[in-house]
Length: 168
Image 1 (tube, rainbow, N blue to C red):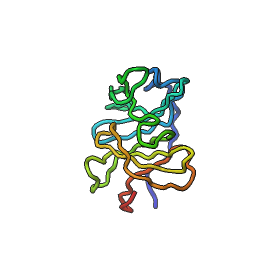
Image 2: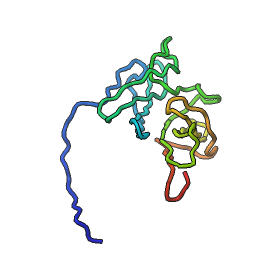
Image 3: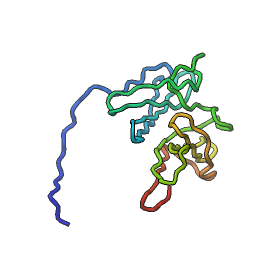
C-alpha cells in the first residue's frame, strides 16, 4: 500500500529529569516503572527498595507526564509513618511475603466492573505463581485471582484488555 508517510529519525534532546527518586523509602533501587492514562491523569507505578531491606511499590501522578507528584496514600508504614506514596509492600497481602513486578494497567473492557478498572499482575518469587489484583482508584488494590500456579516468571509481566479479541 503506497502512503505519503516517511521515516524520519529525530535526534535526542537533553531535558531536565521528570522524576527524581529521592524519598527515603525509594532508596537507591527504584525501577520497573509502569505508566498509564486513566482518562483524567497519568499514573506511574514503580518498585522502590532501600538498603534496610524495605521493598514496595509506589505511585506518582501527573497531568502532563512532565511534572510528577507523589500522593500521600497513607497506607503503608515506613520508619514509623504512613505519610508516603507506597501502595504495596511485601507482606501486605495474605501469603505474600515475596513478590516482584507489580505491573498495573487501566482496564478498557466496556464490561469491566467499576471497582476493578485498575488491574495489576505480580509474580510471587520462588512460588511459581502469577497473581492478579484489582482496584477502583488505582491505589487500594486487593487480590483478584491466581492467574497460574505453574512456571517461573521474570521481569515485568504485562496484561491488558484486547478490544479486538475481546479477552485479556
